[in-house]
Length: 275
Ligand code: NAD
Image (cartoon, rainbow, N blue to C red; front, side, top):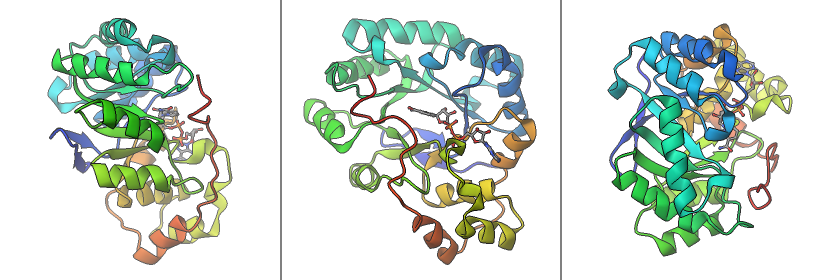
């Protein structure tokens, strides 16, 4: 199964489908990431705050997969924002991952109350220039945060990783991303299981029509919306199910019906409040 790639604004390519490890227990991470790599995933999304970078690193090493066939993302945690702290944090993350370079390094949350995200962005530009990451981006940034970064810097974030699922589609951020060449990564692509997405008729009818599961229909909707996604599961069968998205296509009517589910239904933190 070949996963399509999206070309980022810095010329690097990102596999549109990856595997996320938020809430994967550190002790289980190596085994679960190895399962994902065996199934065929080549893109892993972790973060310093997930406390499982070591397990991701052990799985990468044990897999024997050449480094240039993998796309690894990690993230700068809020408490490490600022010039010096960010430089230290990437070194700690690289050490834990057992890598010399990640593919993508993100500011995890803007934390506007700290007012350090512009300085942290300048640190990420230096971290990229030093070869410790190929690409740099942001996460949970609202338009006002993106505008401040753009006004203060010559580098446009390669991605904005935001909560995005059928009940919460983030029109302001996706439009800004489209206009400025910022790829959208959708976290919580399945709504984190926090609302009964898989029972909605718009989704169950498409699932029946294509002989797929509701989860596959939701993930396929994201793929056709051009989002980068990395659904998380600890279960090997679901990890395989979530990878099997590329031999069916939703019709434009099915796609539109799911897009019509927007409810402003955020399930995660408010980007202006998370600190
Ligand atoms: P998700 O939407 O991927 O949902 C995960 C939940 O869905 C789990 O409870 C899992 O059991 C269930 N699930 C997965 N596959 C399923 C299937 N096929 N059928 C039925 N249920 C299924 O939520 P997530 O893990 O929060 O998001 C994905 C990734 O996004 C994370 O692992 C992490 O890498 C990233 N993330 C980033 C941020 C951020 O602030 N940048 C925040 C949250 C998550």
